Length: 386
Image (cartoon, rainbow, N blue to C red):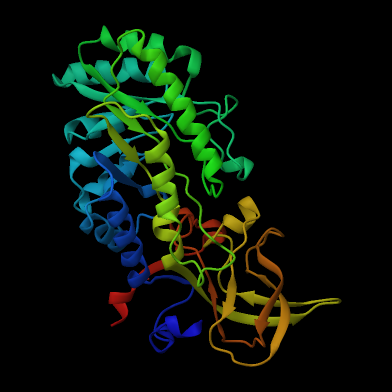
């Protein structure tokens, strides 16, 4: 569907670059807002690690979402985009002192704590400032998500979270500290999850924990189920908006919430992936022994997901209407893993053609590197090209 790209505007831009279709982003945010309106006491914190483009962040903030941050830099980006501090949560297994202090200074909603040593440092730093830090404890629920091994996070073998057997002890420890306040539990089982059964399993584990804690008179104010909803990489045009209805319905229906309890979500990929494409130019078409290569000016430095996760992205030649031929689509980086796709069917491709690598709005621009001393790709939204 080449008509969705303002190709006539692309000619003035230096490739490779990211293009974010804000009409798709806004449609996605409208669906999220509609689903949120069906639930009581529910908050969505957008996971900034998926995409921190400033204009994308400002658009997301306009729809009232909060921010899920995993670094001090992400907290800064959220604040600069106008997110309210009382809607910012800060997660991560290795929070540096300056990052914790930065969150305390700006009065963020809470820290999602992942270990006892981290809890002790937050209490110490909060005491030095004379403030009380709100904390949720990230629980490792030991729930398997059916996704790539590198992006599953909820198994006992993963580095994330506090073991189920230790949670009660950690909550009791926090109760003895003067400068932290326990406000809830946080979970996250993985990313690119399409099987609602995985989220159902998480809900069952949450319900078990709540029942267990109630026996010891522990009140849970907030249940944060993280994110993880996947997208359709195969058919970005057919399903440009993920199935938020089933996602929110599954969790909201299965979790047995207590009166006044707030349910929090942290979607990232599902919010931004489909609105973004990496736009690249063909440098050469090279005839190999048994195949032909379309060599692009974009490489794994611009989009690392295919090299890192063997991830699939739909690839389109958006300037050719010629008959289909088959290519290995590769980049210029001096690595054999610098391949976007093998045996890709494209309209006959020539030097100078523009190639769109789709569904790249999440973990694309944000993960770009300067390996081979390459420049970082720029990102443009629809409004930039009007």
